[in-house]
Each structure stands twice: as structure tokens, then as C-alpha cells.
Length: 247
Image (tube, rainbow, N blue to C red; front, side, top):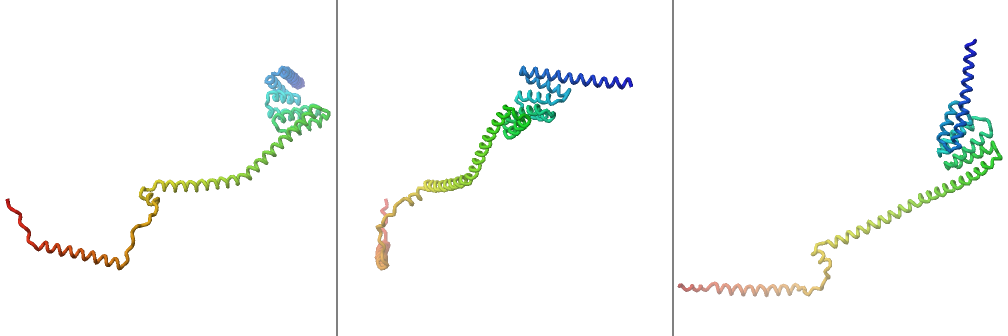
């Protein structure tokens, strides 16, 4: 029985030391946070949570991470802090900073809900009311911008077939012009003889066609002349040729 009591006493002592260490670490973290040494504050808060998990430790750790610009990472700490306690005031603070982190991430719809949760637990919080109004205004602007982008995209999608048709028509006209240019170029590169034949004007002919009777009469005259020449040559060939004089 003596050993059992001693063992229980050691457990109680260890728990007390652990709680005291966690509170000490939280104080160290708060001191570093006030000095804007957020990295050191984060380290102290993490050790405090390891020693003794608490909503306060989660909340403070979320703040240290938030101050370093790691907004998305801080969300988890604020959510855990809100779920780890029944204290409405602590929950309101956690949701308030959760809304701030979401606002920085431009997730305005979720930021609006976080501020609403903060006001549900602490209705008179003027800072939460102000931030809620700002988040709603930014959400409206964001939605309008998205709507304008969607309308612009739809308009571009409607204009795309028309632009394609115009491009096809333009391309068809360009192809036709290229074909005409090629034909003109081929004509310009034609052989000289062919080019002269194409460019030479047609002149009236001075020749007159003969009738069939005139052609026959002309043929008989030519034949008679040829016959006279032949008879003359025969007479000359019948005479003996004179011998050449010897030397």
C-alpha cells in the first residue's frame, strides 16, 4: 500500500510540473509575441501545447502563425481553439481571427461566415461588425468581377465562330489572289515566241485568193513556159560541142 501511494504521488507531482511548464511556456510565447519575435513565440506555443493542449495555446499559436503571413496554416489553429472550449468569449475571438485569415486569403464568402459566428457568440463586438461589412463589400465586388469575366468569356465564345468564318473567307480570298498572281507570273515567264504570238495584233492580209478557173489557167501558162524551155534545151544539146584548142 505504501508503494502504491508513492506512485500516485509521483503522478500528481508530474502533472503539476507539466501544467506549470505549459503556463511558463505560454508566458514565454506571449513575451516573444509582444516583442514581435513571432518565430520564437510560435516555438514556445508549440511546446506549451505539447506539454498541455489547450484552447488558449491553440489560439495564441494561430496568432503567431498569422503574423508571419501563413494565413492558411493559421486556420487550423483557430478552428481547433474554437472547438476546444465552451467559453463563448474565446470562441468569438477564435472565429474573429479565423475571419481575418480568410479575408487575407480573399475567401470572402467564408470570411463572412466566420465573422457571423463571432457575432453570434459576442453580438456587441463592433470590430467584428465592421469586418463583416468589409467582407460583404469585397464579396460583392468579387462576384461582380467574376460575373463580368464570365460574360466576357461567353461573348468571346460567341464571336469565335464568326471570327473563324471571317478568317476562312479571308484565307479563301488570299488563296484566290495567290492563284491569280501565279497565273500572271506564268504568263510573264512564257517563251518569247509564244509571248509575241499572244501580244501581236492581227493585221489584214494583202493576199487575194484565186478562183478555180484562174488557178487552172495560171497552171497551163506555167506548163507551156516549162515546155518551151525544155525544147530549147534539147536543140542545144543536139549540136556537137566545139573541141578545145590544144596548146
